[in-house]
Image (cartoon, rainbow, N blue to C red; front, side, top):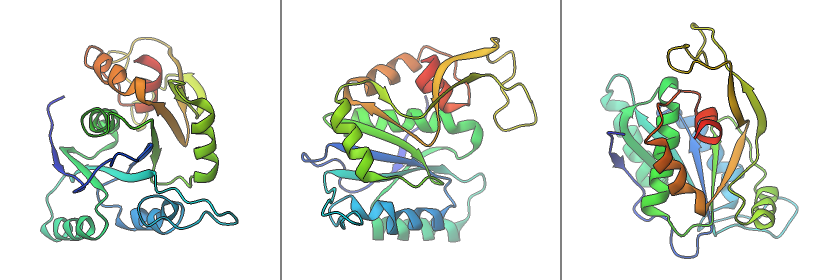
Length: 219
């Protein structure tokens, strides 16, 4: 995949970090990112608050947002984005266009980031910007599953052929009626020994833009 990272946190994955949460987020979704930082995201990272009703904090978990380039450059939005990064230091941006049809590329971008910058972290949690995560439960699940390659989500397999829908997959791109069983849903957890394997395997397989199906099923 021919892209680079053109925006990164100044410090990523210090040695004590055991899990990284990567949130897939549209580049212009400033409000959604801030909402996450102020709610479930507030209990992770160096300034972690307590999870409600418990004494639990999660400084060993890091939260980052995966974004890409807008379809049209907007100087005002770019300045706003640079300010957001200066304040929060949690944006990871790549040099491809941010769109539904590049969601698989964004998933691969996350795996590339983990392989290159966080190779010793135990787990990666992939999620989306419209999901509320129960960090208390997720930390327990991660502790219980250890080296399980992929955990979470719901099983799905049907290929949608509706060419006008954002999830429609043309026959020439994927000719089969069903995907291999894959994890579709709010989030899934990937263990350390799987980051590089998925990324390396994906380089040899023609991608489909249904990212969960590609990453957790086809690959």
